[in-house]
Length: 161
Length: 161
Image (cartoon, rainbow over all chains, first blue to last red; front, side, top):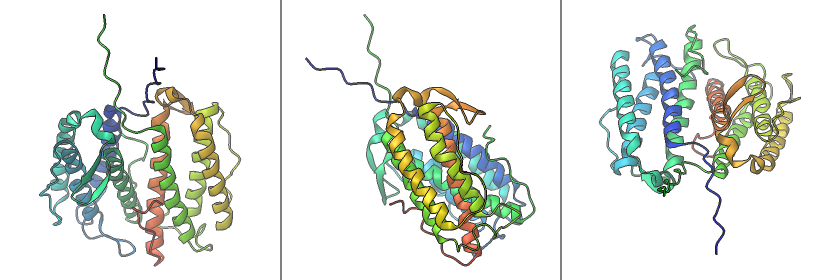
């Protein structure tokens, strides 16, 4: 007779992790919106990239990461050319819809499985997802400094609706 | 007769969430170390707080958040007065040890329980923990911009050892 093991602790459910991420993505969208169109790919501090380039990096990582977690395919055609803010927001909203549609198709066991994302990053799927989320928080926060330096009040960090 | 329900998906274990956070905290420690001592509480951009003040905010939130999740008590005496970089690093390392010691005492079911942190923030414990982690990533990234503007190369974002 074996003692049944305790059920694993539910730290966060798949649904809650997606909701957490989409909350961050709503905030990031507001940061993109807050940039004047003519500063998005021109304003920089400390020799860093303009925020528009960072926003495109986030787009190239978010929906493609979820798509790869579901399908094992790692492709994206977003590109890195500067484009108008409205075009970035349009791509952002399309990514939001794609992520919502794909997420429930991530098999429950996949989160703990080791995968190789984008042909080069190997780790547990959750770690790779967290990396993409954390990278978004990181670059968005740099956008906050850019906005402040431009004299623009950024949206509040805690507001995620 | 009932059909046994599928076990919940393990997105991340308590141990892995702590490891993830401590990886971020090692990186944040390197960002604090990278600041010249005479710029930590003086250098600012865009009218924002100096990075030393942000680092103290992180200290006031991290170990106290874990302590509160275990004990239900929300107290801290770190304070917000400027102090030398070495003193901040010493507090950082003490917090690291305290978090490692306290974390295994968070009851498994606590992560999904609704609690009120610091007397004012109500949510699932995991959401509150993620808020503290995300807030660290956010302010550390602002430190990255400050370092770049000071002509100092920040530590790589992906290095967490």
